[in-house]
Image (cartoon, rainbow, N blue to C red; front, side, top):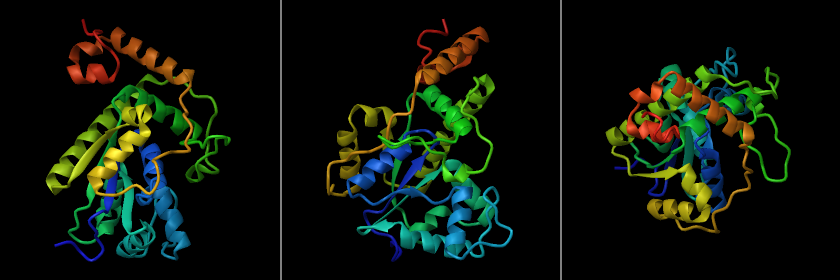
Length: 275
């Protein structure tokens, strides 16, 4: 039986970094389907807990501390419901961090034993995702609105950053491995919880944003209040392509494609490189 907090149209966006989740969530919000935001990154917990008078004295942006984790979830639930729809976005590393740091399940925001619908966003081009992550983690610019100058995420204000991004084979490789593992964790999570879920590829959003988001809304049982759209600008440049090509060349040099599955060869854009 659903808890009083949970409703039939509530949903969670299960994401990995640079998978297109901000693009998807922006379009969902624009269509009137809630407003799925991140509430569980370390810096955001520290920030919101301070705004809401819940922050412990020892809290920092990198090591947040709240007086009552359950009260924090209650506060999120009160602020994350729009037009009767409760929606949040969470990355796997954020989910695990909240569990380990505070001893609570982030999805308790929907109520005890609630089972919200799950929207799983992923990127077929896993290498492109890893390269995008390397660049964003260096510049601290994670999204940009059309017609606006890029701005540093408030989570990184005052921290060291660089406009110059240096190619890093091992940094990209670590991200490829991590994102693939995070996808597997989400797959098991959805299966273990028995959540009703729908998968969304970033590439489908790019090809047909309105049509893809409309399909998600149909799955969620939510009628769009307006045509799905987003004001986010494309961030990829020639540098993304350059780093991707260099990474593939390095993989071939080390003969890594020989040991990869067919699916991973495809997701890294290696084609018949293993031959």
